[in-house]
Length: 283
Ligand SMILES: Nc1nc2c(ncn2[C@@H]2O[C@H](COP(=O)(O)OP(=O)(O)OP(=O)(O)O)[C@@H](O)[C@H]2O)c(=O)[nH]1
Image (cartoon, rainbow, N blue to C red; front, side):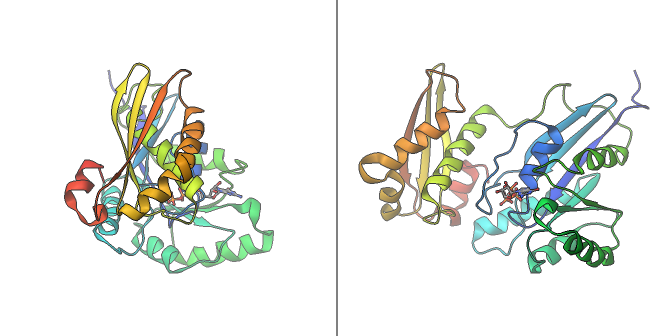
């Protein structure tokens, strides 16, 4: 069997935090894969979405937002983002049409290899003239193609998908047809818990939380929540456990019925600066 007529490849979706990378991956794949959040920097691991169609398969790498490292964790996140760039067939740079361009965007654009695509996302939130102005400015980067889209309303998403597929080299499928993500179930649940915590705690401690599923049985899941300091434990637990209760309610909506979810809060002192914890959390 030859794959002369089959196209496949890896595509990195890059952009500063909150520009809509996860939403775009979900729209391109057509199912909810990675976790979408209103908080920047929630995409920690390079969760992949896979677009499989007749004669093609595209593996999307959702890289963490590139930002200046503030701790060892920050440095690692940047490494993951850069590694993902060196091994892909195409980089897609996502820019937010509804926010002004900042140094973060410039950095990502400068790091993208020639021949990358530029996606101007959230056009549903920008005026026509603002979109034109932005496209004009972006054209100085000399990338291959420019796509004004809305990952939310799906405007322009089909055209982008087709253009991505057209750029893929001949090659075999990397995953069985029908697979849309290689994220394991436990990672998925840990992300759901983390997502729910961010939603509930809001401004309180977005950067010093990690979650890990430590036990899964037929109808029981134990997920541990790690914070850096004792004082943060109380914030996470909430008055008489009210926050954890809310997290449980939110997460259970995505789990099979009758699944018991146990949430345990633990203190891992300064985990963001310790390789031991970073390895354990797969960061
Ligand atoms: N109006 C509008 N909102 C969007 C669009 N795309 C994404 N958003 C919103 O923008 C916010 C951030 O989207 P994400 O997909 O989490 O962004 P991200 O780039 O993956 O963010 P990080 O995980 O922080 O790197 C969410 O509230 C999305 O609903 C869009 O096309 N239009």
